[in-house]
Image (cartoon, rainbow, N blue to C red; front, side, top):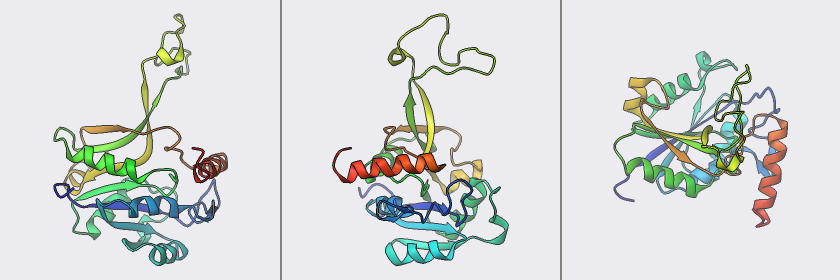
Amino acid sequence: MSQIPKVTALVPMKGHSERVPHKNIRPLEGKPAFHWVMETLSASPYINEILVNTDSPEIAESAKANFDKVKVLIRPDFLLGDMVSIQPLIAYDIEQTDAEYFLQTHSTNPLLTTESVNKAIEAFFAQQEHDALFSVTEVKQRFYWADGKGINHDPKVLIRTQDLPPIYHENSCFYIFSKTTNRKIQSRLGSNPMMFEIERLEAADIDDMEDFYWAEFLLKRKLEGNL
């Protein structure tokens, strides 16, 4: 562990949400939804700081009151609004600290485990070929282009889905990169990213209400020891 540099986590959170009202602070199995991923990050020995970039006083207060590693960044005016993409937020956040290495994640991944975070950090620092890492889930299903052509299979040759060559979904659970790389490439994927696979249920992501209900169900199962 001593050979792995300390990592700063980036967790951007808006107060407003279009598809799930107040989704970051919406109660989810007994606590505000964003607390789940904050607990996961707080338990990692590799993460020594968690930067919470938010426009919400309620989120800021809850984060500071409940988590020791937190530093709150009040979102500046030029980064407000639903149309701001993630890279400008990252570019701003990484300049607010002396840290060199970052793990960016989302409050909408409540089933993400500390074990996966730790393994991903270890995998990233155990190699030198890739300048970034991102989490993925394996998919073995039949996909088509809009014109009916198969993307990952030949529709004229029907094989079992479990025998299809896998493709990988960028699940947005986390990204690991350095300040140097992000300044140069202006992307959390760097120039040659490494994929880190995690299980589909762990990668559950809350985009809409159906996702919220699904995450709620999975967390309940997990707390009962049935997941």
